[in-house]
Image (tube, rainbow, N blue to C red; front, side):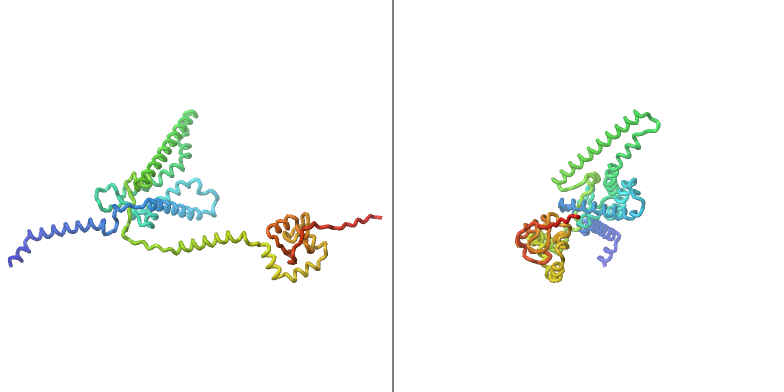
Length: 344
């Protein structure tokens, strides 16, 4: 009875409630880090981060291609005046439904990556805050839009309708110098950031470093099942292509073609050709089918262009006539007897 009274006392209930609150807090901390499988301390390969950026860029280009094809039947150049704005809008839409909802881009999700909030003091994984996601989206799409629109911005800002031509030209020159300086500084910062990325392995782009976003593995303990079916197929086709490249120059295609034609249509073709008169045979080359240029013969009744039969004989020393299949002899020019008949 004493134990039951002690267990039902208010002090004992408060103590148990405090212990349960601490347990719930620990579970919450574990759930934010270990239960989701995200370990911020596991280093991510540099090639994975660069591949994620390339996949995101390919996806943006694919979406733009599909979007532009919707207007292919419209007037040419319809989207050209608004192309920078449309590209930036599509990129922001992609980031809205990928980065803003799950703290990861499409390229990162394919490579088992996601963004971690490095500004948080907690050692466990922390997703990006809404302000960080918005800043990352603006710093990603904004500089490219500004670079593509710099020329039109100079024209719109440098020409004031109430000012003189000298003041307008001076203002436009000053704005151009400022934009050039800002662009040079941005490119230099990107170069320095990339060199730091190669050394430390974090933040491949400046936008990630500015907002405090770092790529980490979503599930580092997952064993990736790598299938080599695609690789084997590619190796097979590449090997087959290299074999054909090596084999085709060794095959005399003309001789093969003439042999096949002789086997299939040889008897009839030879009979027809032998039945022709001399002038009918001499009207076309036996190889190119055109009017013979510098006509030559190889021992049969057929006539060939000099360059056609000469190149054919160089490619194959034991040539045969592609028309009748006769063994070719010595190359001789065609000799014709012309009879001059005078008018009486």
